[in-house]
Image 1 (tube, helix red, strand yellow):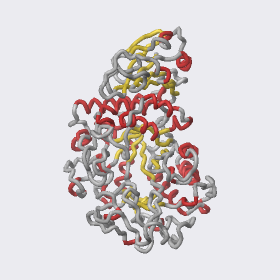
Image 2: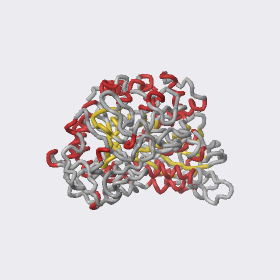
Image 3: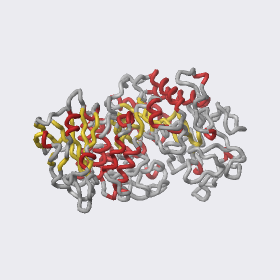
Image 4: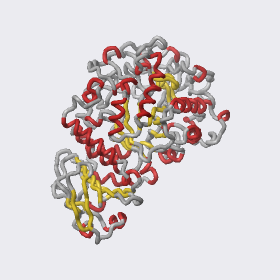
Length: 604
């Protein structure tokens, strides 16, 4: 473990997500389906001190180095041939089709032979700049071509009994001739694609279950056909009861073989200096494994950070009930807050109201232990001309002020979001999907203006982009103050539904379509904020008044006889003083609220 790596997880991690392939790539060819030699690729060495200090100065505490483990790829190196295109998505390959859990992607090294040393040097730079590091832990599936060159004896599938669908100590699930898809060989949905036959030679006489639990000799193009499902000692086709699996204090020699291998993976990267892990599709893994593995990881480093990508509405989950709560009980620090993200997106996509967010603020413990984001590599870009109402990069202001401000859990920004990267047009395998490609060699045209040839100085950004990046910095730094790090939440929309001055537009009979308001307060320090967000894409709202009910004043510990000052902190250019007694009736008059804006008013 690096000496720079503390065992203390900050009270509120602020995570900057970056895909090294995209982050430092200054090649602007962007040729469709082109190889690395044409389109370029970011390197570990591109992530230098200037870039890291700029990220830290924005208020970030953690760097999620996305997709750094060695994945199946169409690029060949002297010590590893290219993978066949039939088992690839894109030329570069999916970062979530891992080929060797104990190695990093050679694309990211100046000298591929020294790739692990270059990665360790990056970890050291991060720690020297005061940033903790997170990498992906992808426990559910591996590339069809998985083989570890670093630790060959720990390669998945070695010693498996291929004659049975399930065996406790097999790494994989093996298809039976009677399973759907007309029997062997394995038939992939790639026939007809350039260079593809639809076949994968190693699975001619046997086949394995695909990563998304598809038991078929012919997975579809919509399946995770490039990956293979891992077995944690439970036959997922027999139901979701995993109570037969070992408990958290079980000795390694008594647990399923996959558990031991995955524990070795975590230990390997912890020993190298990695501070935490983002667990991919964590809800698809038995909770018994998580309790066992996280317990052991924390014995090695008490401050090891674990965040779960997980969805409660996924039919592939292995456990009944509230899987998100179960993951927190198993030891995760935080889980993805997909419901709030979806609700916000629906305001622009399907006519939802800001008021609809209220139902999601009663999530118990989960509310303050959720990782909140407005973008990540799986989701569409805020500035996409096709998504979020086509409103451009400014929509990130109200959306981020809401998702970052409502809870105490970790917050995350995806590189490019801060400068309005739009992901416009087709970028390869993913097509024109409003996402920056994770499958192909590419560069981000707007983000490259901040990189500015490796200077990382914003030199080519427009004034609007520069202002947006500075705004995000102010917001993220504000999130480290007591009210947002330790404070409680109080929603105000319910108390303003009948308030016609709460942004009500012509034709609306209640309020709360486009405005959302809430309080945050830390009782220990006494710090409190009123946050008001205008989601409307075009309307500047004037004459807005926010009612603060008597109960809310009591919650704040404020007497109605008090005189309160509200001071704007995101853009310190407005303040107002008012008698508290006026707030439950008349409400607090606000300055004009531009479209797609947010106020963060500190109470004094």
